[in-house]
Image 1 (tube, one colour):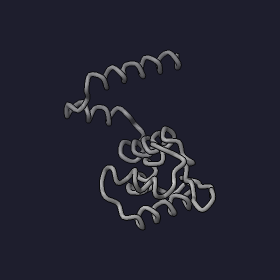
Image 2 (cartoon, rainbow, N blue to C red):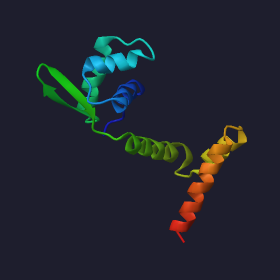
Image 3 (cartoon, rainbow, N blue to C red):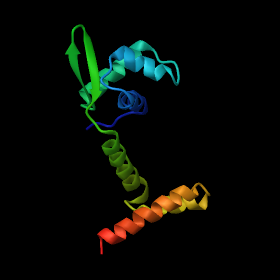
Length: 124
């Protein structure tokens, strides 16, 4: 799959919130956060169709769009790519960076401990 730009991601995010959706439904959803030009959104929708990130089906005189990519699958893929690019595939420098700048919350640490504990159980 081709790289998805930040603006394309916002369109995809709108579809993850509610789908299937017409182009006008997507525009309405996006306009809740900031103003979007109709033509811009329609161009982004077409790009996402070409990238096979979203699909559509024609219903009467309207096109209904839906995501072909699950949000969790996309975020996992992007997370892995990010860690590979910036940290040579290692997670600990990323977490250490957050810890050093006090950006880790207690809930984050608790979740990490749970993940580590589960990993240890599964990989003994």
